[in-house]
Amino acid sequence: MNRFNFPDLGIGIGLRTVHYAHILDTQPDVDWFEALSENYLDTGGRPRYVLETIAERYPIVLHGVSMSIGGTDPIDFDYLRKLKELARGVNARWISDHLCWTGVSGRNVHDLLPMPYNEESLRHTAARVRVISDFLETPLVVENPSSYVEFATSTMTEWDFLAALAAESDCGLLLDVNNIYVSSFNHGFDPKTYVDAIPADRVVQVHLAGHANHGTHIIDTHDNVVIDEVWQLYGRACARTGDVSTLMEWDANIPDFETVHAEARKAEAFRGSGESGVGGRRRKGSGESGVGGRRKSSSKSLRHPTPDTRPPQDAEAVHV
Amino acid sequence: MSDAYREVSRESGVVATTLISDPRPPTPDPLALAPLQEWMQSVVTHPGDVYEAAEAGAIGVDTVVLPSKTLQPIQRVGIYHSMYMLRMIEALEADYEALAYAMGEHAFGHLVREYVQRFPSRSYTLNRLGDHLPEFIAASDLKRKTFLADLARLELAMTHVFEEAEAAPMPPDAIASVPPDRIEALRFTPIPAIRLLTFACNADEVFQAWREERVVEPRRGKTWLAVHRRDYGVYRMPLSQEAFTFLGSLISGETIGSAITKFARRFRRMPRQQELFGWFRDWSEAGLFAAIAITEQER
Image (cartoon, rainbow over all chains, first blue to last red; front, side, top):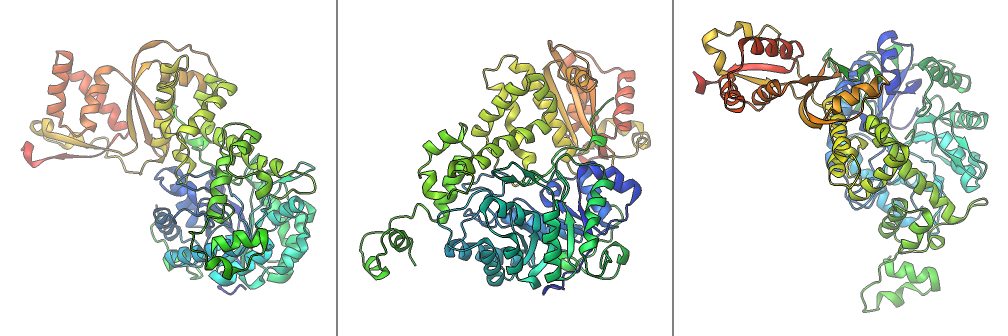
């Protein structure tokens, strides 16, 4: 168990538009879902309705791509206010975003842009994470990103930076073992060293995904199955953290729901207890509180880095 | 530790005390976090290729980024640079599928490159990226820009309607409960998820043909359309000019009596009873109104 007492939700799936109908119609035996926050802000249409409906049956975690934790623009409190409202509305178990920046001078590049890892950026980022956590009234959970450049001004490794950030800002960690593998290939470090150095008691969640290997570099595409090396890293992480909420991301060339679910469930082989769903769907109504501690009562309610933004096929316009 | 100290110490090892006592204002460190992010954004979003982007940058790529065993610094930055424009094209193509089809892949990509220079994303969501595309097209020198701007306005309206706040429509028979002598004093509250559009060409017909994988050539001639949402699905309702005018009056908050007066002035005739019955039947069934009310002023 992590130091925040965020529960092990079991093995979850990233909630994607193409699976809405399947989930609503069949109510699959999935432990939990992770929703991309930005897809459900500023919309009163079908996405929000679907999320709220699913949240009545499954635990939900909100995962963002636009918080710009490491950015040098002012913190966007309008965004945070809406995020907080959404989290309360769907009883989100926690809120996560990436160790990155997404734009400056009022612009958003909609990418998870890399940070230099040095004292200046550590102090800057830790201060922002503290402010964000205070505002959201819950410890922010920060994910390690994939990256394709290393800065000349970096003076520490990413894992040392992340550990120091977690200690200074008292945040949780979302350990993306695929991202560790991708960055280790791109930057030439041993991914096992990274996994071994992470403060295990701060790991709230793990991400799994596929990627595209171009020979000279790897791109974090989320468009494929998880490779064996990443599964081994996952097992290594689980050995340190114990059973931890685990999430399969599949954001491009998305297959049918059962294929994604089957890939996610491979994680069971690496989990110590062999059981999933602790605190998840099978224990729905166990009294655990989400972000803000409010349980919803109403009955109705990039690929990284690109969240799906489009109306689903089953809600397309019809000529009348 | 000041930025000035760090800049000098990195290059020359000069001790901090030397600089702290220096009366000159500190020189901003171009590799500090804020200028580094400004630099990287300028390179990543540059409309040219990554080499042109690097040339235009205030700092040399090799000064900022380390090489890997397989890639040079500029190649590594190039990954972000190429992904940026692909992401912009992908996002706008998702919102403007018919427009992208009508223009063709190359022309649409070129349009997006120019558009995001003029209207870069300033929102935390990509859903707002395309909000200015119709006006951008209308102000461009594109061939067929009138048709393309109309098609873009149609698709933008569909996106907005898809995202609008939900409101339950009033019961279809709600008007029937109003005493006949109070009908003209009725005001309607429209559902938020409705947009009325006037086109200079047959944009909706072309859009529908694209949906059905048929070809209909654009042609000039005014057309009128309501885009609305019902049960979380987006619908398009072609309207006559008369129906469009009358519905527009109601949606803008006028009473039925006022809408009739305006209609008579505009078309130099009163709306026929059969017309009105047909319109209200269709609009009520489509769930265009959330509520009706008779205001005190009208009593």
